[in-house]
Length: 228
Image (cartoon, rainbow, N blue to C red; front, side):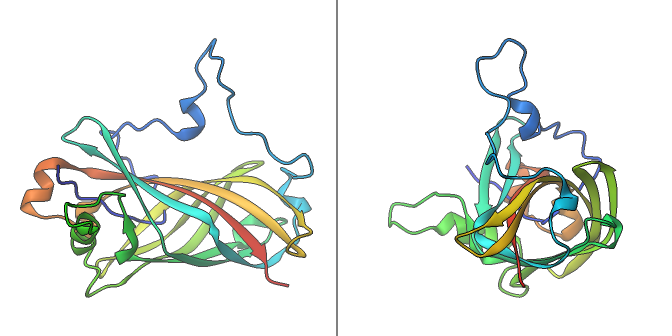
């Protein structure tokens, strides 16, 4: 099984052919005994205005960038990126003035697959598709933020991957914030979702394209720590 995949930290692109099920909806089945969502800390506030404005740094130990792609138009193949860094300028009183900047190491692909020699060769194959040798960093720089609800918004920005830059839009949700005694800082949490077409960034090959869909869904969860 060979699958071409790629990251983008962040698109609301209209890739209807993938037709993914957002994580928030996956458990929302009627008459299901499964809870609709994981419980939050009782002290966490879902009001963004309760969080102090200012500069925040991405907590890489408590962040994930997951990508999913259809294999032969059927099942969803899932993997992640391991190396992430970023900053957030958060303005809860004026969300449109907020901004985010994220960098991901293109060669930090992690599929969990190991070959007979015990090597992660498949991860390297996908990194090659992403152009990791020539372009080691995947970056997202926000350009605009549009609030769509009390805890939701759209973040539009520039995604640079494989040496190409295209605009993308990320669906973002605020998952709460609170002062964490262990860190002595305020921490806020967000999730994001987008879909990109990897062909826009030239990420593919004749072999990979036979097995992997062009649409790639990106699922992001991250905590940010206030810098001061």
